[in-house]
Amino acid sequence: MEYMENLSEIFYWLYIDFEELSKSAAKFNYKSEISFEGSNLHYLARIFR
Image (cartoon, rainbow, N blue to C red; front, side, top):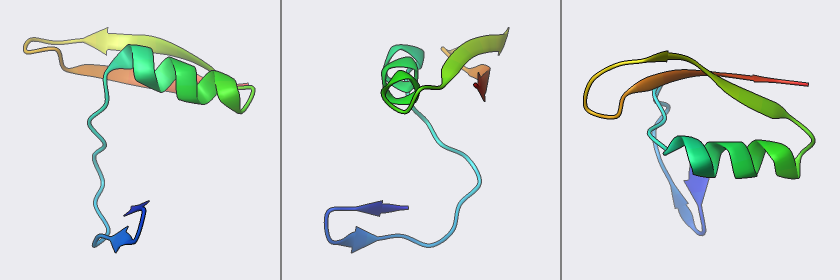
């Protein structure tokens, strides 16, 4: 992941709230939906066209 001039090691999980995920997906003509909701605001999302 890269943010501004910061580059991180590879990681396999991304933590972002669903509203922000949906906005970012829509910006690139993708749709998103929650597939599963768990406790502590955890969720599994699907991003698709």
